[in-house]
Amino acid sequence: MGKLKTGEQLVNHQLNAAENQFQQLLQTLIDHTPSAVYSRNCTGQYLFANKYYLDLFELTWDEVKGKTDFDLFPKEIAEVFRKNDLDVIKAGKPVQSEELAPQKDGLHTYFSVKFPLLDHSGQVYAICGISTDITEAKRAQALIADQEAKMVIASKLSSLGEMAGGVAHEINNPLAVIKTLSSQLQEIVVENPLDTLLVKEITSKIEKTTDRIARIVQGLRSFSRDGSNDPFSAVNVHQLIEETLSFCNERFKYLGVRVSIEDFKKDLSLEGRATELSQVLLNLLNNANDAIMDLKEKWIKISVSNKKDWVEIQVTDSGKGIPLDIQRKIFQPFFTTKEIGKGTGLGLSISSGIIQSYRGELKIDHKSPNTCFIIRLPKTQKSEHFKAVS
Ligand SMILES: Nc1ncnc2c1ncn2[C@@H]1O[C@H](COP(=O)(O)OP(=O)(O)O)[C@@H](O)[C@H]1O
Ligand SMILES: [Mg+2]
Image (cartoon, rainbow, N blue to C red):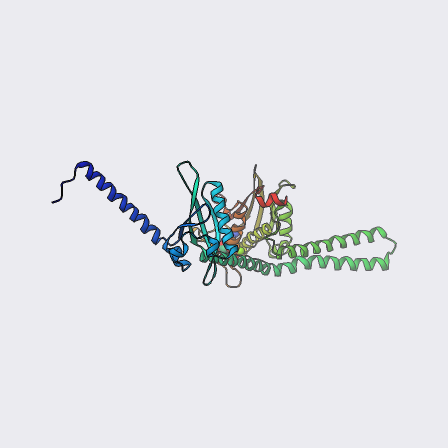
């Protein structure tokens, strides 16, 4: 016959049961977690490894118990594991790292969090680690980065394509000027060979006009190259606008679009990459041009606001704004309202990616009665990268 339990015995019994249940809960969690969980002492000998770990490396606990990573893995891999363990022991606090471990199909990448186990006196007596396989996520990340890089190129090529017709205009005009000046020169040589002043004036005009063509060609060359790895440098805002406009000025003139730049400080500059900023601006100008093509009133206005730590470049066109249902989608990749072959729908999504990477913002100005896009950029980047090259 069992004796009845006292109140104290009953409480103890319940506490023991709760502790056992908790132990069981922990054991179940550790056994079923889809990560390798392990513990090693300060000399690197295994104190514990969960089922996932043992299955992963096709080992039994008897093969792992008391061994070190140097007994289980190739030397160069074990050295990294050991170094990371020592970092935790030295720091006395959790350390995160990415580690490589061999699998049947090659090396896998693991995201590892290792933390120290402390004894009563606060000394580290072991480390415990949780390592999760992130190989697939890394692969997907690399694929996305690769696709993004390809999208940037596609969008650039499409901007270049849009410009191609325009460039003919940009270059044809100065060529016509050179042709006229050369015929004048030929006439002078025949009729008035001694008028050196006039000859000088005409040749200097020819020189200036060839410089203009050279600038356009140079601009195109630097625009089409991949500048995404260029170091950040001081970009003069006025020059940026002028150089970008030099790709499309003549085309706008031909299409009857009036382009104006509101006056602002000529020496205003910001830290960035000129090719990327030019790509953003050019897309805004091309978009504006496409939007107003069929309007009676065709103008594009560029204005610049110089704020304390920020520069805002506004591109406004004579359109009356973008309908709300379209506005919601314009920054999404591949959204376009243009016919096939004309738009890629990548311009604004890539542009806002570029501007965001500068910690800036590309947005629509909802207060403007006309369609207005604002590029808001910090004047300085303060990034490690910038510091390293400046
Ligand atoms: N200034 C603008 N006025 C009206 N709609 C615009 C303007 N800028 C952009 N959009 C809209 O945003 C869409 C996406 O632009 P973008 O990403 O540059 O791609 P794409 O120019 O190839 O269409 C355009 O197709 C157009 O519908
Ligand atoms: Mg576009």
